[in-house]
Length: 350
Length: 89
Image 1 (tube, rainbow over the protein chains, first blue to last red):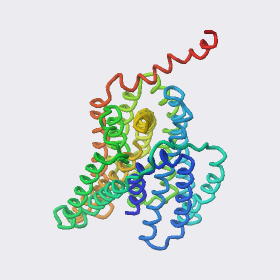
Image 2 (tube, each protein chain N blue to C red):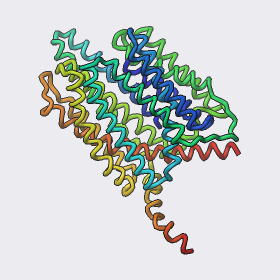
Image 3 (cartoon, chains in turn purple, green):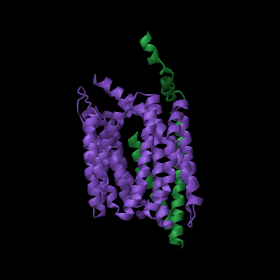
Image 4 (tube, rainbow over the protein chains, first blue to last red):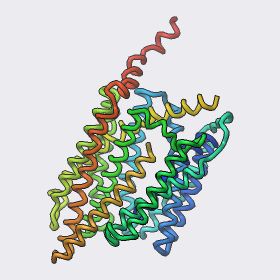
């Protein structure tokens, strides 16, 4: 639950955060998200019990859910669709992989020499500096013509349904798939999600406009993104557990091992965005996901007495290359879609 | 987009830990040692994750038409020289 609290809160509220950025203004939303994220990071570091840490991680996820869509729409408004934006997103992807790399090493070092709490404390000064810079760098946007109405019922049913579904899946081995507890939770989750879809098809300003699924390209990119992250993040999770619990690597050694993947990804970010501009996102995306799948399946061969060079370096390199060729084209395709959606929103407001 | 990515992450981790824990428990019951059982569980989870990444391929080819997205990229590349011509006209 500690591993999933952040992702759930983030994913569940991201649509909500995206709407907030559209309706309340990008700068205000970005700053609110940053403030929540920074405060929650401090709370994570101070946590003394699992439930408190889970709650603080969820709060971090909420902050990020407001921060990220606002930041993305700032980038989107600064660069026009096409080669320029592809380049900007290539840099964005490279920075993300670079941040992950620094984080892997810094995280390992901090855990080893200072304590895991400092991973969270590190966010506090960074967040404070960002909070001070945003008002100077980012212009405010406001959509005055749109009525400000949040789809609260949609946010609650959608997030609640997903939280329960993930809880049911992750607890099932403990209680059994046929257990009353598992079946009850899955049934409740399905009912909530069905209610969510019914609400979204009716309300005036849904947080998830179902019309976006009618755009086939966007629906395809969304599905590919879901499967990409579903497989790769879980690969990071399983790979880390294998290195720490079977091979008894320290946090630092684990971070250094994953460097192979993130450095490969950084190195290929440039070629990836160039390729997208040349041949289009579809083929690049398919190549990336094939590489990720190949890397993960190769990793299944790692034995109990595994060695980094013989058993892990190869799969990590291949999967890392796959991330460069999949994340970048998918976010380019997704931004092309966001523009469509905003255009739809704008025309409805007129 | 990012919603589906984050949800994918949460659901993917839930599925992976579910598969791994289930298989590890089964192996422990049949008398495997702890490291062997853990490794077996992780391997089973990785097979599932590799398959999940592969499911994306038909999705990409079925949903995204050849001309749908690449167009935006190539169009801009062709249009690029235009600003230089514009002041002359």
